[in-house]
Structure formats: structure tokens, C-alpha cells
Image (cartoon, helix red, strand yellow):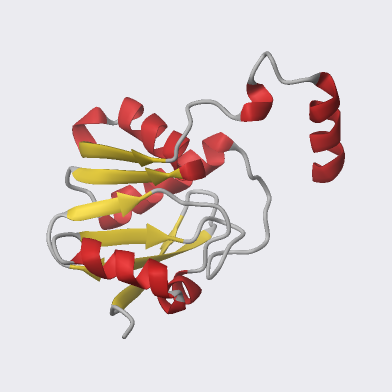
Amino acid sequence: MEPRQDLRFCVTPDRTTLACALTGSGPKLVRAGTWMSHLECEMREPAAAATLEALGRHHTIVRYDPRGCGLSTRQLERLDFETLLSDFETVMDTLAPEPAALLGISCGAPIAIAYAARHPHRVSELVIVNGYGRAYFSAPTTPPHLLEEAKLLLA
């Protein structure tokens, strides 16, 4: 059985609509956006649903589809770190205005970390899972041929 989720939408300053979902009950735990998200499909994935159900026993889990993913606006004007961080700020302002725990998983980790650094008074706890502080391609030791390959794949 899928956990019940309350779907909502919020709008960013640049008028992008972000789909958000609340699951469970208790103090809020806000998950920073992750790569390739779809709120409805995630609920049908057994492992994800079980994790949300377990976390939701003690927390209201706040999740959202980042711009370009799932139920959020698909047309992208910008997709850079500052824009993604601004989107997270919108989700926090709309759905978690009181101090809340943050969950940064994988590529959501730098967003959660940056938000906590900029707004420490809004963060009660910070949980990082499989995260990183700097992207592989920004490291000074990244071989030049890998940078060129990445640029070609993104073009």
C-alpha cells in the first residue's frame, strides 16, 4: 500500500511551478531536490514508498520535483546551482517556514548544505546521505579529456 501524500504546488520568483508533496506526520523533514524526480512515480516504487512510510511515522516529509522533472514545470530557462538553491528556498518558504530538518541525498546534498549555510536559523538538523561538497568536474584534478567529454555530452 502506498503512503498517502498531499500534493501541492508553489511558484518561484521566475514563475516556475514546483510540484511538492507532504507525507507522514510530525516535525517537518524537507528533502532537497534530487536528480530525475517524479513525486507520483516515486510513491509506486516499493523501496521508496517503504522509506517514506518509515520516515513518515515520526516526520512530515516534504519532497518536491525540481524544475524540469516530474510534475514541475518542464520548460527550462535556467538550470544552474543558484537557480536550484532559489527553488529550494521557495519550497522552504512555502511549506516549512518554521525551522526544519533538511535531508540532502546525492545531488541534493550541496543544495541542503548551501541552504543551511545561508539560513542557519531555519535549519534544526542537517542529514546528508551519499552527498558531496564539490562536483567531480569542478575539482582541479579532473583530467581535461573528461571535461571535454562532459561538455560534448551536455551540448
